[in-house]
Length: 481
Image (cartoon, rainbow, N blue to C red; front, side, top):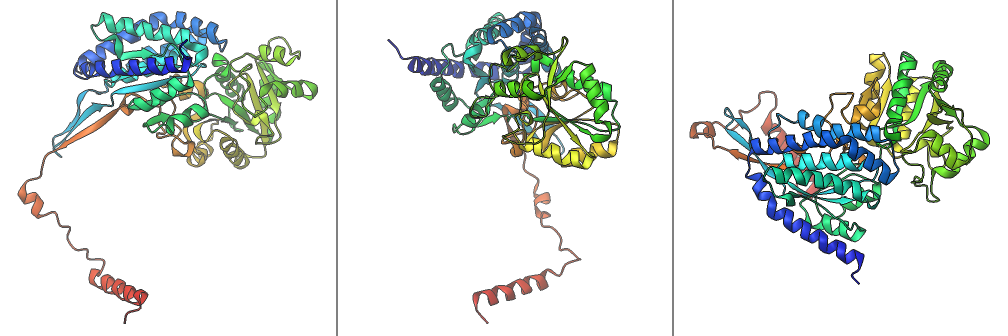
């Protein structure tokens, strides 16, 4: 009997070898053929968006298939259209005046680590940006989403075959194990890591270059000048999108005392239910594991499902469960990331206090990721944008749809960089331009230009006087006279 971990490692090595052998043919195909390939994948992705969405929801139990369909459309049609004019193969730029030519050099074989919360859309997205930049990719699927991820890969393989490309350009581990994934990360050229903090940390410590993303503990500030009903509607539209499985979804509402009652009334009118007493105790009991991690049993669930799991009754039409959370930190579960229909609720005296509270929430597991604000006061908006350690500051828009490029002009993406403050190598929405190196061909300057390279002496500083002063100081430091 073959051990599962050994079988996974062997399969991984075979997939990477095959991908590495196939990749040069894609790099040599040229920009036009590469563009045609990703266009074709996008078109089939659109046709299969609903079927793949249903498959993902049924297999994982997370989210809503209708929203997963929408994510599949973003990861195919919208993504390809956004980058249709982006050059990613061969010469990508030529500056005739400076005599510098930039050439895209593909990285080779990419490892695509896929989470169970967004399985088919993330697979589509990573395959398209990898192939667009002339790379091959091998996927490591989350064990609870193997079928739908494999179905997505097989769909892409069908397009590759139809267009006379090697099917080995895209592969998927059929027996996913931690050992197989660890081996994959060691033998590829770049890792695209999307998932939990432990997995992302493992990618960065693998010894292979990686692009990973941090968790998103996204606060949304409703400032006194906002249209309150519209602000609440957008927050709920975001947080209920695929039952909150996107890491850019709001995790807490912060608002000012002068409008707090109006905000609460709007929240309740739109399906929010504030937990109190024993109901709150019971929901908190099922929110987390003993170690403080999210309980997977409530991830991607609607409000009524969470109520059933917790054993409480909620009013008909409830779409969101909220808690007046008194603090921020490990002892306050509603102050953390909750990839489900749960929101913390905070009331502050003014926008300055809101600014500080939002910072504390971001420090509690969301640094570098995203934040939302609903306001008509441009001064306050700019003050927040200048001070908040996030990579996406989203104004008057749902943070889920805004961050991934549905309701904003941000690049469509399902790998949202958090910058160095969030432990990421980039603060951008990751795209095909992150998956090739740039080779710069620079022509030499003529002799006349070289003879005039020395900068003229400045008139505002007596260079010799400064030099003499420094020399005197050095002599004193060394004990010489």
